[in-house]
Image (cartoon, rainbow, N blue to C red; front, side):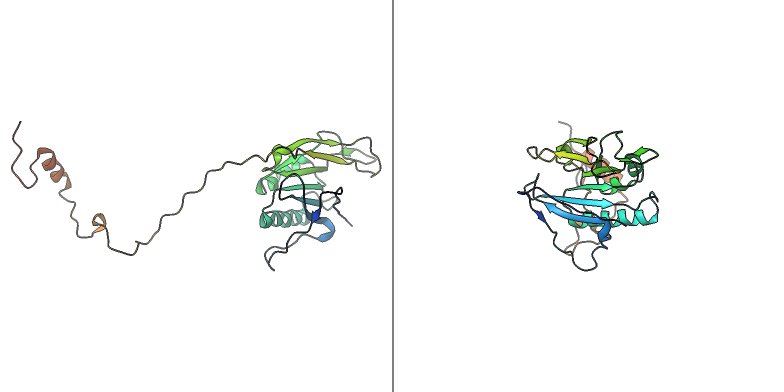
Length: 220
């Protein structure tokens, strides 16, 4: 079972993404994953993803595969994203899995307010993962408790501030690797193989005394 969808208010178009070259990534199952570029918040839009993990298995192999394919999709396109999902696990369990760190995402949820209420108990399994590049745009995330149209779940609202600018992420660049092979051209003097450094200390003393190739310098 499963089913996902994305809708938007008029005025902000939902655009399909350009297809990647064949074999670039393995796409998630269509009945559990959907993605569109929404023409809002950023000048070039933002990637909206909806995800529906398999019920009752936690982070078992099948859900791990779905998350892995979603991560590949995000990295392949490189667009700032917001993922809304029925994760079937708590925000704490998702964070501990390390998956959000791998996609550089921040979890946004409505606190301890249950999003899914069954006959036995309530749980927080409906929430968002937001790209760290646009995490500073999040104004609030709340569970709409007064709505009971989608039982046993409650709608969860995420509000982004489109007037603010995304927060630049400052990171240290890895230094470029030095070439292993000697560059083509004349070998510098310091690389000449016939250079004899055995009398370096003696030559240094001679230089200090002013006796290199001449008599010692007279005292002034």
